[in-house]
Structure formats: C-alpha cells, structure tokens
Length: 116
Image (cartoon, rainbow, N blue to C red; front, top):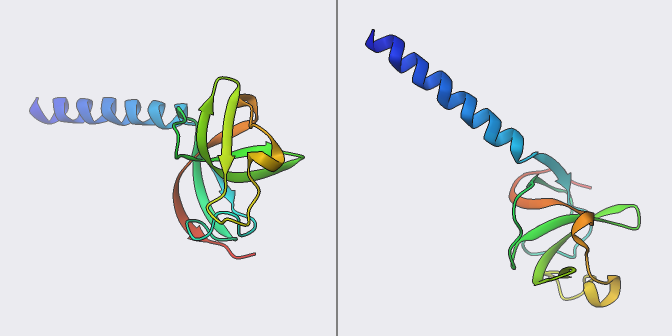
C-alpha cells in the first residue's frame, strides 16, 4: 500500500513538472555576433523560455527578419529598452524600443558552444 502511494505521488509530481515545463515553451537559440560578449559569445547555444521579463534579463527578439539577443536595460510601458554587453553592439538607440510582441523569450542559461 505504501509503495502504491509513493508511486502515485511520483506520477503526479512528474505530471505537474511536465505541465510547468510545457508552459515555459522552452526552445534554443544560437547567439550570432559579438554584441553580448563577454557574457555570451558568437556560436553559444542558449535555452530560451517564456517568463515575465525584468530589467537585467537577456532576451531574444525578432528584428528585421532575424533573432537578436540583447539585455533589457529598462522596462517601458510600450516595450523594452535594450543594450549590448559589448559597448560596440547595437542598442535601442539604433534599433528602437523592442515591443513586447517581438520578444521570443528570456535566456535562462548557456549550455553549449556550437561555433559559427
């Protein structure tokens, strides 16, 4: 009886974990360019999820048909002011405010180097 309860609790826990993971809509992205060095390098593979964005987060968003990776400097009412970790990278000063509908997700970890 005790083994049956433990098994049931484990199955329920796994089910809850699966639903939670699915709700984050995880996917991967490849960093292109040097704008986020030294934090991220060109060719790094990052895990991206849907979650609330806070200032300081690194986000992936669509811009001119490409996916860009930038750091959120300010959360504005109409979108995000983004910057690069490398002082030579593009920022919102050049590309404008990133509207919320263009955000693909938040980088939560770098887990591999794929190379360019």
